[in-house]
Amino acid sequence: MKKVMVIAGQNDQTYGQRLTYRKVRDILTGKNIECAYPKFSFQMMAIMPFYDGLIVSGRLENFFESIAIIDLALEFRKPVFFFGVNLEGMKRNLLYHVSTELMSPFLTGFVTDEVAAKWASLWSPSKIEAGVDIANVYLLEKAEYEKGKFAVFAPSQNGILKYSPDQEWFLHTDSRVIVEDPRDSKIAVKFAQKIKSDDVALIFKIEDIMDAVKNAKFVLSEKFYASLTAITFETPFLHVDRKAIRYFGKELSDYVCNREDTDLALAFSKINEFDLSKVQNFNSTTKERYKKMHLALDEFINAL
Image 1 (cartoon, rainbow, N blue to C red):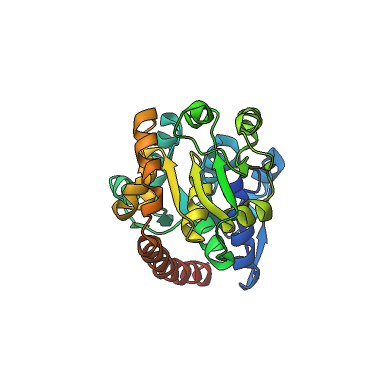
Image 2: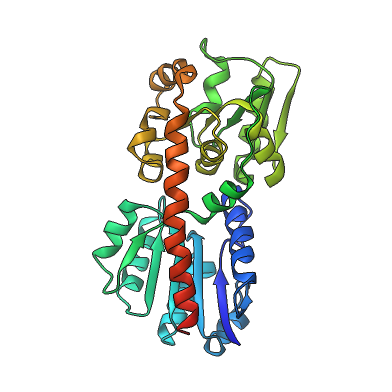
């Protein structure tokens, strides 16, 4: 049986990476391979020569826990498969390092969006295609639809949403405040304290976040995966950060606004005009694109 090392968010405590890790494990469990999901250590790097390949999924945010391992696999001429790698928001020095890795003929697979795929094509001798975020696939399988109980907010420590409860347009109602990233915990606590309602709760766990979005009147978010959960569960949403359009696409651009108070207030005033068919189209497209990724994964494994 072939042995494969896997990097899929196992060293990260953020909501999106935890979703990715769950889904990748679920997918690979049914394959005829032996998988290892190591935490970074020098001992782990020493055993890389004894593995037949490397599968990488999710965000590449830490040099030693992801990019250094990819480097090592390529150095040993091991095949590397990108299974929905998200390059958005990477630091410039890490992105530069990935560009050198893409030059290797041993690296193939999928990034999560068209923008990243076009960038990767500048460096890659073998085709890197646009796929989907594996966390998105996990959410699609868990999607349920029950609306109207409370509002859901997902503020970021570096965003503007934390000031919203002080604005006239803000709707003070029963609420759930998502902590998608542990680094946002303090901001989330302060945000929740400003909401003038008797029923306000902070939520951290994957199942609690999905349940809150499923039951929400709307989701107002600065966090990518909180908004992606809303899309998948067909919940009206507004995402604060135009960068998300590279994955959400132009069809959902009406529900993505700039990080400016006036733009946020204007976009929020139109949330009742939410077009459900647009998120349904997005979800259908995601399912189709994932089928191609899964077939390519099987081909990669069979060729080991």
